[in-house]
Length: 353
Image 1 (cartoon, rainbow, N blue to C red):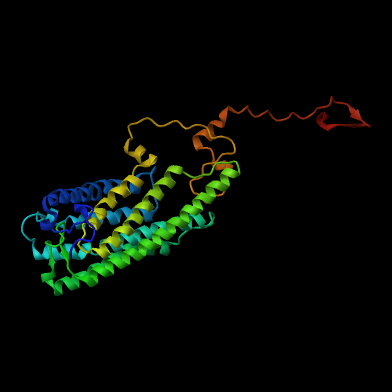
Image 2: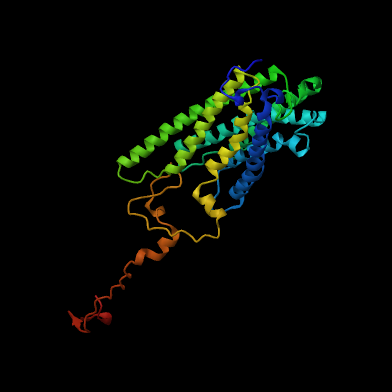
């Protein structure tokens, strides 16, 4: 199949012969993104989320990062086996990598959708009630791996039945199965979930804007972290770009663009969620603590956009304990005492009324 898009080598066919002199460069870039970000930086970020008391994150976000760690490991099986270059790799290793890789993009799409769905529930939910039950959370966390296993098992059966269609030659970066039914199944499944993600992104953007505008008009803090909003929107834009990449892969099966895009998503996840101030503060533990300014009266900073306005929560504990140098509490009133005398022939006890 001749390339449909001829804007550059990145749209060419993903074979070493067609890529020509750019093949080693693209392979090094693809390997570097998967190795540095997916197998080194993202595990550090996940460990920070799990074991740091200052940078906790919801399990759906942690799960999202874990899916990209798995994708990095699966993508680098040939690299770890020392068979990424040269002659065709061992058939068993090639089939194993092919089966695992065809479940990656479905796993990604489900994990991202679960995270966006949780954010939607948190934004629209009642702050006095639990957002998710225990079983709902378990289902949301396991759904990406159910998708992964389903496509992996299906690809494994097809690969075992047709081992002659599994090789590294026609994908160059990794072993793949030349099977249009499997390819279209994975592509359509991922595209549908990306469409749902895009719909949730639009809904969240409108919801956040209405909350910010309403609280600003009310003359108080919006309670929204503008940086966080920009991060979420940036991530949403990149997911939208992924939808375009999927369309390109539908039109041009041999395009290398989807492979390069997939290798960079882990880096985007790390940059979006790993460069927040509390995470950086945990990593830069040797830096002095940043002094907190006393909160302005009537201004609150809620941790959750749905939290009820509570002025008692607006001041940090250390500031509240100091009391802002409030004047001392006045002593209790001393009861009025009359001099001992008789009133109407009756003597008052201790002279008190």
